[in-house]
Length: 241
Image (cartoon, rainbow, N blue to C red; front, side, top):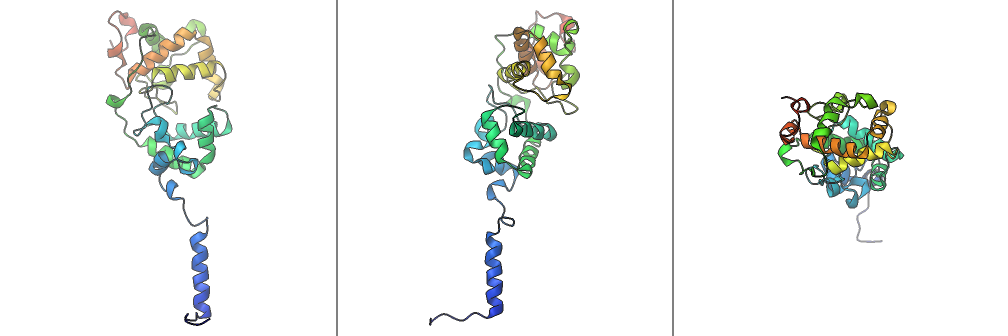
């Protein structure tokens, strides 16, 4: 064959090695999983339909219904939830598919990204409070129901509902989402918490009480819940007064 320059053996070897390196999957990083932010908006290996922003919003604040706020969630807690979704311990068909598609490194990146998002109370979705009695919800949240073996929500999630010691924040979540989770714990659709505390508490609560405490917890939004309580609530049931 004429018209083409000949390659020295050494250069030919280098060229072959370079070409191999460009296609080695162990070296080439998936461009859609380079950062947690990219995974959040591209879906990474889960594809565009698995992008977190599709359901949880561009700021991670949820949809005011069943898609929760994930902005500002503790990374350790969020990682555990992805593991639970992937294993089936927490059941949700769409989240199962997404969590299974993301490897450990991708999960760490995307949860770190959302953990660092500085969510603002003012941006929290509007709460649905009409169907529940906030006064009874406040009593359950801050005092529990000792006679029924129900501990106060505040003892684990904080009086301001911002969470603590690995327990998730409830502030900024929607009433429908929180009520749905309580129902899921009660029916064993969701499980895996330490000591089955949420299962026993949810089962001990009447469905109306679950709705009431969900509405109150959602109304807190980072310590502002007391202002949302009706003036008719008893002073002893109005925390901070």
